[in-house]
Length: 357
Image (cartoon, rainbow, N blue to C red):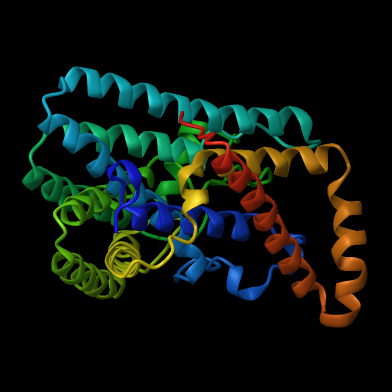
């Protein structure tokens, strides 16, 4: 069963579930007591939480295949599509910078951060759209291989993959200085999980989505199955050499998360589009940027206004912590946060309001 307007309901549902997961893991009530299933790997490794951002980039690549390729086939001018994609990418990037600037201005002790999640999404979208518009499909696979091979050489040239001392962090420090996620004032070392060099393999994650989008559009679930298993195997084998690491977005991490993304997309396709199950998460998927950017703005506004701590203490921690512990209180806040934004996107969908940057 297809969504109205030729959309795949399964893709809207997967995008929405991914956004809901992003809000869940990004908004605990107490960062000192994050419920353990919502924790990122401390450094090397891959938890379910580490799958969320690569899933979003993968889904974005799938969306590019479904949005741009049909228009090319219908005779749309490549220059027109390029212009629209570039402006959208710039708007996403500018929104990320604006949120970071607001946090630096409004929150005491917070400095401007140049990299970020939305900035990486904007860059990846622009590059993947260009590949979709101007290059044949065999070039996509060549680009994935080149990006991952080149990034492997870069990582190994740095002698270590340790936090702070790896070559990726050193490059980010040379480019952005202290205006990153984490800065050690005593040593001058920096680290940012959305830094510039690690955006190269993130583009590969998005290109995997572009390839999967072609298979989805052609209704070739067998290719999604084979591609997913192959990517998982490649990621597992590569991890014996270079560990899975979200912060560095290692090549093994690209294969491992890309494989899971293909298999999950296959599952959503079979359940929603083939079997006709409800497209749970669709409303989040239809307003993905509104939900994510709005939640980020709320993360800035609540503590800046002095509301977060009393709200958390009185509504959650004050009575949940004595009964079940601080981790459950933190989880309850995260679940309530997602529920609030589900209500917001539900109301937007009812009114057919969709934020499209």
